[in-house]
Image (tube, rainbow, N blue to C red; front, side):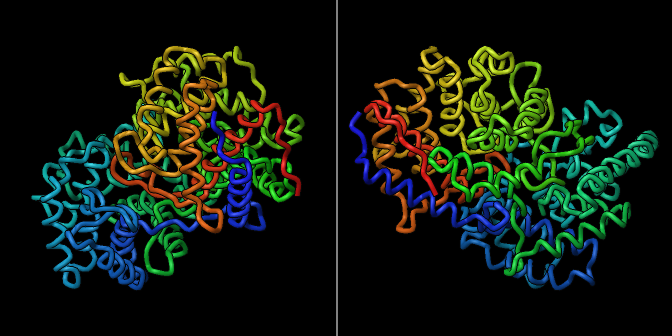
Length: 566
């Protein structure tokens, strides 16, 4: 291996670590400055206009003005600021402006409708649920030509908890909101009205269970988009006025100074978990500045079950102690806790690992929210499964531990024909392939033909400049380059040395003068349709790659790299 010069590598790691630590708040949480969301803003102004037209007129006016300013010259909108025009955001923005400010937005609406038609309309949306919500909002706005046929949502599914969890999963609350909206959009016969009389109270009980679990804040997963869909449904149906009032209050508190809303308001645990694993790989595990972050992890472990999705206590959400517990963030946080010097005596780590093992699917994989889900956007997911396997490995579980072995066995069968792997919550396919290669290599499968093929796919999709993008020729990103470097390093195969060296060289060159790296929209919000950047994840993944590279080079030289002392 022709290693990157040690001095340049050490400087990049040190500067990058300090840049990441500058994002840490006094309470240990790592912060970010997320871009405003067209989707969240459009949904929110439509919902506030329906639920609280007088009291929220100021927010609606500011939000619609912001939407008009974000319209591209081609007439469309991207999902977040900086993204190119795409169908979902354009459909929702056009509908929202037509519902809330048709006169002031007449030109924007006309241009948006033309752009929507030019892009192929909502028929091009591959996710059936997202396609339906676009159709429903356009129908509400009177744009029946753009909306096309509107399918009725089977609200009766809420009467069957197991089926509802597996089919709807984390989409339970927006599904209920959309179903409640349909009361005055689609006619119902006598039999349908009879079943809805049973289903509607059950649906409202589910919403109330979420509302109570979150401390009656009205946050509804601290995400303006699903909160807005629920609020629209409550406003049009007249149901649960107390929940509607709370959601209006939360949306008012969540608005940005520019009049827009974020895609997801609170990702404190997501960012902090990645930050600690990145800093630990960079040699900062014993740095006292990370002690408050561990305290934050301890304080936010879920003490109660989330009954709506049948998730027991013991995991973590992406936001705070009142959030919805998820496998992805929980696995990352467990890897973070396992990296602290006194991890062996950490009872929170132990109980969290027990929770993680209990969330494994019967097929050996892990899903995001619901075990054995049948919702493609929940699971099973190769990347989430790999994170769970890595968390168990990082915490000392042997390769033949039943959960590790079952997870690895599933991963060995879950690849695509070309050897790559999918990732539900980050851009395909480099991220998924790299984390699977890393996990399988670390639990004893580095020489397996499946791993060799996946690693070969990574090597062959490296771009000429040394970086990696999603594997389709798209420009490289820091995140995907960092993941790919980690994956190829984990195999221990000297045949990948040149690719790794070039990847690390690209990462060093991509760092800014302050030690930070530029973030790319690789985090999925709506898969295939809307992505957003996360600067903390960018920093953390780059640091993990450089830290692993330094450790590998030092190991081959017979040197043990010491931890950074502060």
